[in-house]
Length: 291
View 1 (cartoon, rainbow, N blue to C red):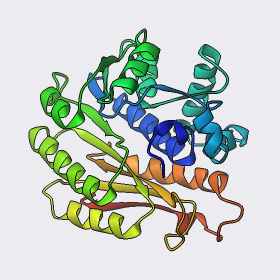
View 2: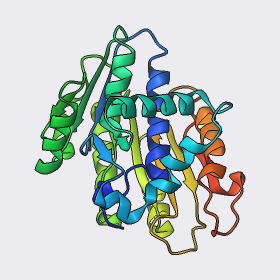
View 3: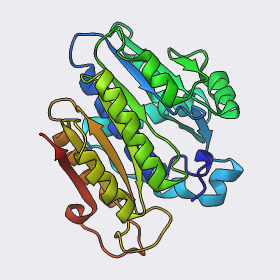
View 4: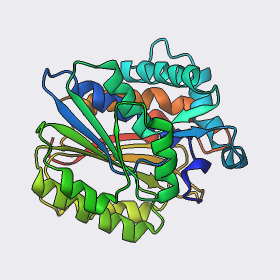
């Protein structure tokens, strides 16, 4: 895989990640109390699906383009909210735009002006930070040229006491990255155990993922939920077999909502020439620790 996100913007993994983010934000907003949201790996905020990178891979065809063609009348609420968000972003910017996680956070803040939601995004790479700052500077989200490993520790616990930290790193060295991210999660959890943490991860090397799960179980972090959606079986070597999200301290009944979301999306993202995967075999929402 090429880890420059412009190549993968709007693919099935991006769509799943952002819909689960929308679900988390919606549930956090159900309580009439302020909360804080941090995107620790902001990227550039907006991506063009007509760019050379996006056209080279064509990954958005099996992701956002497939979803926008699907019948979502009976979809879970978070998927409907997501589709409406895509339409708004395309009306505001360009019909080929795909919004990244910082935009979804800012969009949620805009929709809830009296909800006491404060959003921030970090981006360590200078070129990506410049793009993020330029594209979203008018939106209600703080943007910082900052590394997540240093930055998260500096901003938690937030003054709001409630909140979410989203981590969506590039995974350039999978085994090493998993270990470093567990250490980051543990350090953050120890400093702010009440916070909700959502970590996106790729499913392409099942041995690395299983080792990741084993290491997570040995930590003191309670209430660990894993959400997986696969478009290829684990024993087939492709660029990306599936997408995963680890949530520490998910909101009440988030697991049930996640199951509904993934089961609805699975047939939409099903690959025509891949071995047949049913919703039961392709989707998996389970507790690693707690419940």
